[in-house]
Image (cartoon, rainbow, N blue to C red):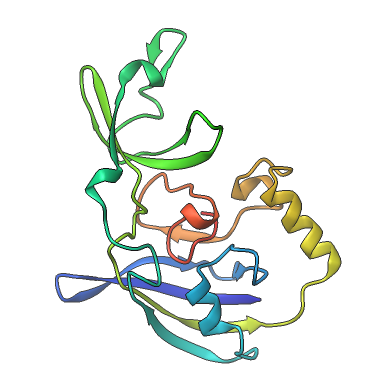
Length: 193
């Protein structure tokens, strides 16, 4: 499926744009692989090319409630390279890649850089928000075997796991600097940014 869209959230009683596809670079995904939120896919799956859409996903259909227990205080040493703190990548509001003891990779937002600790927020940037999508379906067809194979390679890390590693990025503009999320941990509908 290929779509162009804008994503809004409520802010002080107004709709604020938080993400949109660039002209000529639509969001393309294969449904059923967890690339996009299930509720997002369900709203689009039956639409034909040329169809316009305008729908909302509740926080429960999107990224759930914001959870205070998803904030961690990590030792500064965790972010040191050759004995020096990584100021280039670890600063307030930066989105940084992390890995737990089991080797699972995920992203976190730096909330505060202190003298001894770094506070990281693991909530999705849009947790607690109702998401408002508006756009158009550009193409809706069965995926080819090559497209599925390419997706599987990307999902298993064969492309390096980032948008820019496979044929030129994912084509999205964001108003939050440094957003480089991947799939379900991403912004908006859950794809890579």
